[in-house]
Image (cartoon, rainbow, N blue to C red; front, side):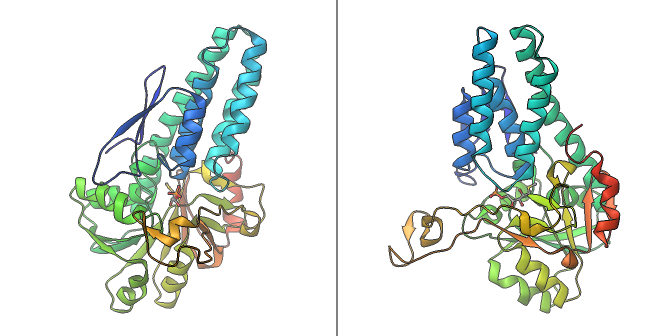
Length: 347
Ligand code: MRU
């Protein structure tokens, strides 16, 4: 497994995910602002991974504070900066809220102790993410029958988390149990997380993977080549509606048409019980050049109008089951999810 990030005490090392799979280049963030820019530019991406990175970004931004006043100023400044980086993934806000609670809890202590406690909290967020992914992997693998061929979208693997992965965590565990024959990875236009990252991760572990373009999924389902679909999520509303990478909704509709199970795997840090439905989930709109260009090469008219929503919302009615570290929830989600809500936002 290849961790997306490594904390070095005075800096945060990130593998530059924009350059994979051809170059494995590591970059050092030494300030909170550098972490914010890394999240915006997708050096690091994936809902849980950006939450963990943001927590370390807070530590970098406050580390050199000399007195309470500058500590408070630096803290407030970086929290608000990081909250502006990407709007959709709940995990980012969840991690920053944990840092805010820790700051509040230790505010009466010395500057050095507050910094130390915040560093500990960021490390805990990272450690817990790997643990929850492994638990989620065990729960999810129990749903996978032997001999399965699994379709996944985007990258919900070790790179998208602090390690192991959510949807790919389920795949890893089920593969180790001998249940998975092969994985189909959708390329995931426009940013190609499937082609670049999921294929790279699975190939490194010798998990058989076949790359397809996004528009091939329906035909493969029709031919009986796919047993089930599993994806991650960026934010799940209280009723089970799930935001994930653009194209996920289309796969859920296709899975329904072909009578295939459609599973969503996500830790509780992805759930937003303050939202009643998925309609309230903010959807990030990204740079039009991502659609007009491929690998920096213009593939259409240079000023053609473009829409580029980075995520879509799959209605709960299309989701066969939702997997978290707490187990497996089935519809109706308005009845099954509230049991998870107590630990949903913050510890
Ligand atoms: O834009 P990205 O690459 O950050 O989007 C990532 C996804 O949509 C993932 O599927 C999601 O974050 C789950 S990752 C465990």
